Image (cartoon, rainbow, N blue to C red; front, side, top):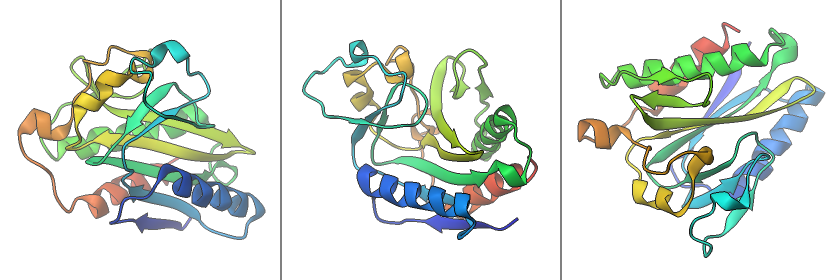
Amino acid sequence: MSIEIKISKKRITYKKAMLYLNKRVEEVKNGTNRELLWILEHPTTYTAGVSFNKKEIIDKKIKIVKSNRGGKITLHNPGQKIIYFVINLNKRKKDIRKLINSIEKSIIQFLKNYKIKSKNDKKNIGIWVKDKKIAAIGIRVSRWVAYHGCSINISNNLNQYLKIIPCGLDNKKVTSISELISIKPKKFENNLANIFIKNINNI
């Protein structure tokens, strides 16, 4: 099954990305377009998923953008890579857990490239390095078309997490690749996309 890979070099606003993503979801449902894997960055944006609680906002001055994805409040900012997808599970196994496992596996494999040992956590969705979260996952499924995706902290400003309780967790328990290995990874997007495509195609 052919999945379109889209890699954006310029930052895309959350609103613009959601318009594009929702349009593709409808096209995939109707069979008029291919599945999608899209790697991009957002300008600094705080988004709230469907299980968000107002108590998770520490700095009341920040603007919150509501989202229909699963999960709580999170941060997107420059230096964090977003991997959005639109995957038609009607053509694969109708198994949400398998899809999440493939996303988790992809992130763990990607981090291994930088000799970073990471793991998933059944109680707290996402990917962890010891007790710190390095990647968040939030998906939604409509008529067995799964969309939204995940974010990986590459070299973003982690201090911006202090304004919220990210994913309902301690905001000090967040990390990034550059914090762990003191380098900023470059030109990794194609490799990241290929890891995801390989694992998604095994669903």
